[in-house]
Length: 474
Length: 99
Image (tube, rainbow over all chains, first blue to last red; front, side, top):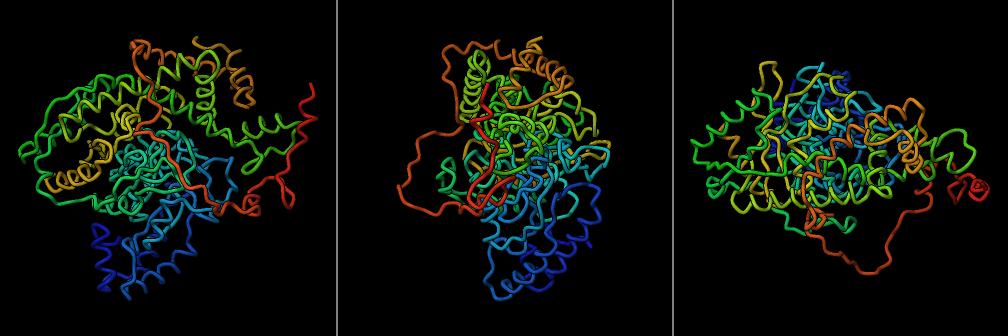
């Protein structure tokens, strides 16, 4: 039976009162993962350890020595390292790789007595918007198995949506948390760049990558963020900003001013999504929220700037997979260069190679200024758009995606069309700001519709508190 | 075409990727259409814009120069495709560079 609690706070109080047994709860999740094997959500499940851990944590709860996340069952995207466990990034290159240390974000969850149930499927090296680029197979959308779960953190989103764990960690470089959360109908949060340490995260695009949670409630996103945030000596780009309780039930959040950018409601947006979001805005307007029309004039340039900069960073980050120190090495080779070339060609999938090629090209002699430098300048213009708008409004409200979950196979042969699907999410990563997906209903095919709220850098408290207020209303 | 097959072959060499003729053809087509789309950025006059390399305030981060624990040799070698007790093993580099 699916466990009956709406968030972790409620689960923990049921565990304390004895109404819920943690061992039964963990066994339920294990059985449900097995039952839903066809969804391809998990690359690895730690069935042996989790029941033992459940016993230990159940005892801690009994003795009152438990951490904040005691008994929360969490899946971890397979790009984050856990010592002595596989970290494959869903790539053949790392199929036999076992991590030699644990990522800071994961360690912080463990330190608060969360139970890590397994590693979730994703697009190879987090490159993709559909989870079709995985050596472990395509993740199916639990709402409709003929459709994609979204990507790149598709396994994390689908696992939470299908009730295979309480929450999951994912990573968001251009929408890889918010987009699959929207497609699967769960909450997903991309924190401010630097809010969460990237130590132990396999790098894709280092000036974009952010680690964040998926859950069934804003409350759970908030408590997980509170645990995983903070300055970390092992990541010099982690922010030295105060870590607070991110949901405050403060009256001041009812006077929030929300901007609605016209560029996010134009051509390409599905009419059902548009109507559904506009209806929500009207409902909220009646409840004292103030809405104003705003403009983010450089929106149409986000995809081009994003794919130039991230592929450039990726081509550099993925240079390390050469078969020398770890990962796949080709069987036969005549020289060192031959070994590199064969190893890399065998290990990487199509989309990863495509992005390495594009990134290498835009960084190569003669093209650096025309593409890479130009895109960095446009990144400034896009960030300036947000800076100007946040002088006038507290938050920005947009659709998360232009369509609901598309059919498996529909876009995989047309990379540019696939990239354009990220139109509403990449801007937050270019500007380094936080964003959340809030599920607001379903379309006529029963597919989830997502609404995105964006805040200025390090304003997660405002973002999550308002998301919670909105939830109470709609 | 924004990019020729010969350029794609050159980029593959820079990226240390061995591509088949078919892959070369496909990437030439795909990268061309992606790069054509990227041309959009040239609509913008950015002559007076500073490039943004980093989304949040970027100041240098220092730490004390203290000795700490680093990865142990045996751990570092755990995932090595080929090794002996202390080293990663690779093909002879000097020999392979002979032209």
